[in-house]
Length: 175
Image 1 (tube, rainbow, N blue to C red):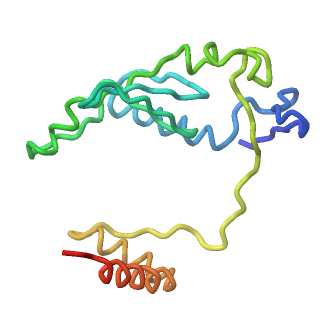
Image 2: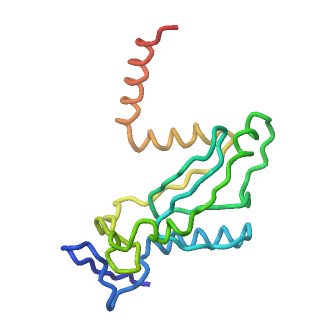
Image 3: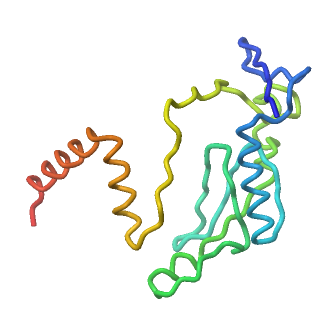
């Protein structure tokens, strides 16, 4: 499915005439949401801005995230935690989206580029294609070690930087 959209450079508004309403990267997020719904059940709400609140030990935390994102609610994908220490923080976690904030009503229509639409495009671009394809790392008993070896094999400079940083932090420790 080809994705075409134009951005008016003066106001950074998406030109919707003759263009797709949804871009391919939003489709990726939508597909992830549909797969999660099929696997765990529940409902999907499409938003363009996410402000969420969750209960915390000392009250309520306001969370704001970059988009696209996938927000789950209701414990549909809550892990089965074995240790008591792991269960304690998860017990109070709850994502609750404030739809009126997400819809732009509290922000005001004056901040919206297209009246009634909370979409504001700061910069539109398509990522440049990578020269190499993503690699597949086989599952192992120690996945962290396998992933680190694969990453460091492709980026040898990263290993020297990490070793230098580690050596610098050991010299500064006061134990």
